[in-house]
Length: 149
Image (cartoon, rainbow, N blue to C red; front, side, top):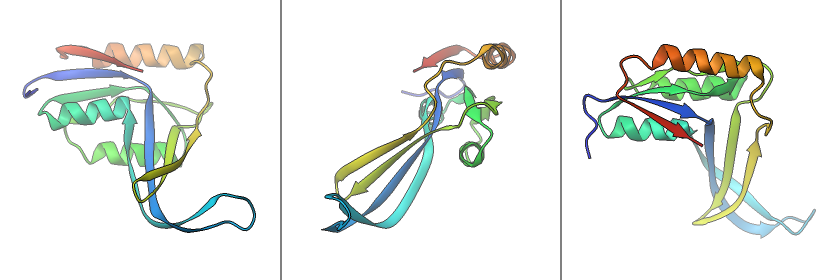
């Protein structure tokens, strides 16, 4: 499949996916849980951001619309998007919510846990209005719209 020449708007939940890789060789004396020694960390756009990355990988141009917080995770997310010239960042910032962050702890090939930092409340009226405006501004020139949930 090849999306070369296609401009696609992606609207949905954007999140920062983090993967913490390490080794476990003991159980904590504080509680019966594994102690993981961190070896490396990887971060990437997740959710609708991952859809935009896939469009880019297939040669298309993606325009990404979704809600981010006004926090360090949002800055990291935007920096990751900026690394890909085929993804246009049309995300909306909200001071009233954190950027969704999903952090996975992986030892060897086993996922030990996932930590979700997010608010589950729907977008408020101001956030919804900003998303509609961002979508309306980004839609002209797009050949398709993908809703990502």
